[in-house]
Image 1 (cartoon, rainbow, N blue to C red):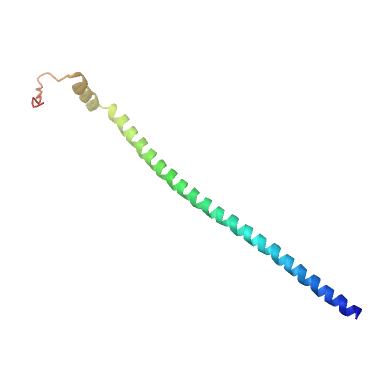
Image 2 (image 1 turned 90 degrees about the vertical axis):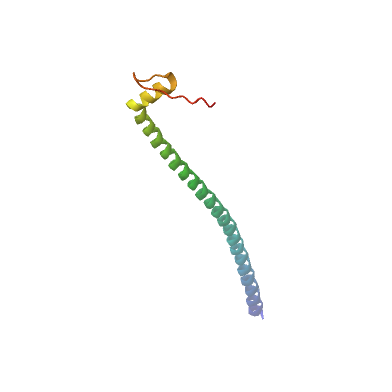
Amino acid sequence: MATRARYKRRRVQNRAGILLASIVVLILVTVVSIKSIGLLQKARELEAKEASLQEQIEYETQRSDEIADFERYTETRKYIEDTAKEKLGLVYPGEIIFKNTDN
């Protein structure tokens, strides 16, 4: 009978150990799931930020190209002539200027 009681006690202890281990595993799975959801949300936010920054890079590259084109244009004779005509009212000798009087 003593062996039977010992056997029964071991079975109860084994069940308690299995139950405790199951609870610990369940808690770990829950914590990992919650953390993974947070990480997925953060990953989506970072992807959106990356896309926004990529658009900004493309815009700034285009703007840089436009500035370089304008810089080359400002070094041409045509730019100098256009600026002299518009801002200073200068003309070539013999050139006729027509002004609109419908203002």
